[in-house]
Image (tube, rainbow, N blue to C red; front, side, top):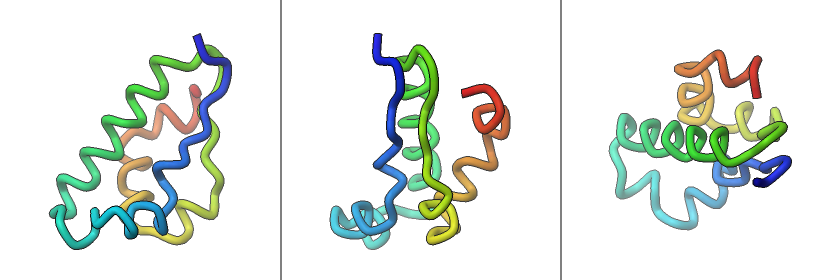
Length: 75
């Protein structure tokens, strides 16, 4: 099991390079981020690390995290 996971898939620039903003509707984009966060939470044994800058840069990332507020507190 992995101790800590850095949630680098929330980085806006990476998602833009891979075309998620152009090729994916907003709702599906949020769903993909939420599913990836679910997987990370199950794989880690301690914490998932998410820099606040990722959320400050992107409204879609904020929406994905805020739809699961218990993750912000728990892991």
